[in-house]
Structures are given as structure tokens and as C-alpha cells.
Image 1 (cartoon, one colour):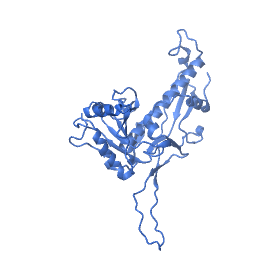
Image 2: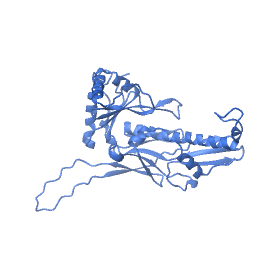
Image 3: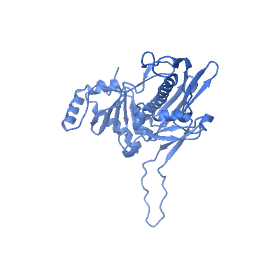
Length: 348
């Protein structure tokens, strides 16, 4: 049975349907590559300066330019791999007609494509998890069984992480819509614009959509010809539920199997609310997030930066074929202050 070169495997990857990664797609659409172990993350800065007053007869005064700070960060490395036992391809594949209609090589081809899709999905889910942490917490905790715990802090204003006080959570609040306006204003001093996306976890949406004031407001919106939806969550990822008071409302549903505990864990907490600045035309503005990729530390990759580097090789005794996917990803917001996070917007 033939093995595949990296070029052939990359060709297979290019034809795969990428799994849904809603947070990445909406807030971190830009790809950036660095042929080094470190990546350079630019965080946009700039204060609210006032032009200094001078006499027209004197020289102009220098002011601090709007700029950015650059954080040099070493991304965590991922290299999931899977074995192929040659004997597996002598018997019928899943879904194949009883008795078998494919050759062992055809079964290998089918299995390689399926396993590549599985590994690519695992890397994208890792980046989606990073996106969730960066948006919610303003930082990412990188940890693993064989990786020392590292916290990448993007320096978001601590006031942008909110704990509701008595009577401020949606369980007890009559009209939760009003809280959008409160959280919106938190970002104005730092960014100069409001947060026009509201992302809710499943429990938060259940409470929000069940409030009489919300249902009345949605009826008014629909009466004006705007499609708004108060139905239950029906898909993974971001589910758009409508726009009201110039805020786009989404529900997020998604899970991952925790690599250490094996427990099925939420990517976005069920009781949480995130307010974020959506990107403008062409993906510019808002959070200004990006997906960074460092160099692949493998001579066969030429030490280049790539989103994925797949390769196959054989072990002679026992005869095992391996497929591995390598990546050095990091997800980072260019404007970390363009988000506000409320961890428990609904009570227990």
C-alpha cells in the first residue's frame, strides 16, 4: 500500500469541509504566519488626546501618535497523530457493502481522508476554545499533560469582567434588555464605540427569551418587518437570533472533550453573557482578532510557518503506519477592550 507525501496530504486537507468555528470566523478572521517559534501580536492602543493650544506664531507641538504595542509570544505546539494497522484494510470498511467491494489501498485512502479530517477538526476546535477564552477573559491559559501551564494575558481592562450584584442577574431582572445598555457603556472610554454583539450561553438564552419584556420587544420588532427568533437552540456554534436596539443577539452552543479529564465541557459557559464589538466592512474594526501560526519545528516542513503540516511514516517492526498533523497556533484579539464578559448573568 502506498504512503502519501506531505504535498498529497495537504491536497486532501484543502478539499476537506472545515468544521464550524463561529467565534474564529467572526472575530478572528485574519491569518498571520511567522517563521519563528515566537509570534508578534499587535495590540491597538491610543488615548483620547486633545490638541494642545498654541499661538499661530509658534511651532506646532508634538503629540503622542496613535499606535500599538507588540507582545512577543511563543504559541503552544500541537501534534495529534493516529496509527494505521495494515491488517485493518484487509476487511470491510464501515459502510462498505457486505463482502467488500474496495481494495486495501482504496480502504486506506478512505481512512486517511477521514483521519485527516478528524485531526484538522481537533486543531480548529482547539483554536475555537482559545477564541472563547480570549474574548471572555482577555487572556488564554495554555495547559496540557505534557505542557507547562502558561497564561497569555492580553491586558484587557479588569472592569470589563463583570460580576452581577444583587438583583442584577437576569433571573430576578424584569427587563434584561436594559442591561445591554449598561455593559455597552463600559467599553466606550477604552474603545470609543459600543458593543453591538451579544452572545449568550444556552441557560442565559433560556432565561432571557422567557422574559415577558423580551417577548413583547421581539413582537414589536417582527411587526416592523425584522425577523427575530425566540426559539430554542438548534445548532452548534453561533446561532443568530435577531437584532434589536442595534444589538445582534447570538446563542452559542458547543462542547469539547477535555484532554486531561475526558469530561465533555462547554466551549462557552451556559450561564454567561459576552458583549463584543462586531467587525465592520471587510472584517476591519471591532475586536480585530487574528489567528497566529508559528514555525513548524520539523525539518521536513523546512521550519516554515503553516496552519497545518501533515506527514506519514512507517515503523518496520511491528509494521505500523502513522499519520500526524502539526501546528503552532495562537488566537489573539487586537482590541482586547472591545469585549465585556459577565460570567453568571443568570442565577443557579
